Length: 189
Ligand SMILES: [Zn+2]
Image 1: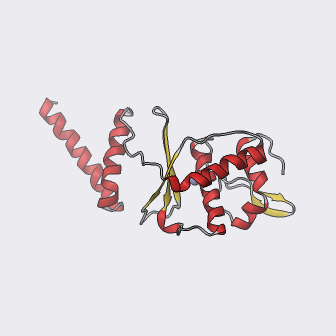
Image 2: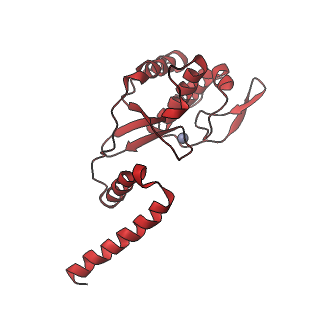
Image 3: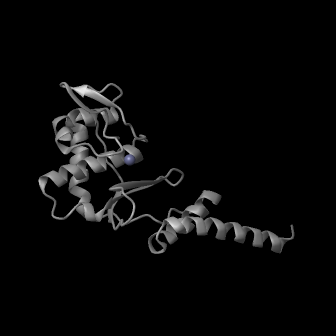
């Protein structure tokens, strides 16, 4: 192929992939993400420019998770991770953790319309569980886990890495176990 044909070919492929992708996502929210992910997947070196500014509103809850890690699992962590709200309108997820291995770049976005501020106690617990799940992905490299086990004769998710959030009553009742489960190889109940 001549050089000009080559460019034309790539342009065609690009428009083709782009048009498929655009059918499924709204232009406004996903245009940038789409371009970015395509460039990243081709070169795998580009800067992770989608990094969000950390919102200090999440500081107390991150601190609470660090404290609980130490209290329940006996390990001390400082989670150096950015957390921010995002206006997610279409996808049915509550939170997402983005991570770029090479650049050691990680940040969590939380669906804004799911958590009304100021948080009541129950929603604060739910945010704790949500963040713990995302930290599981980003910091501890955990995949989703759909296993169930019996604790005190109650059938409960084995880990916080359940794709769907567990009932908050279950999380609170076995909180110590769930923290240990995330970081210890043989968690005790
Ligand atoms: Zn997940």
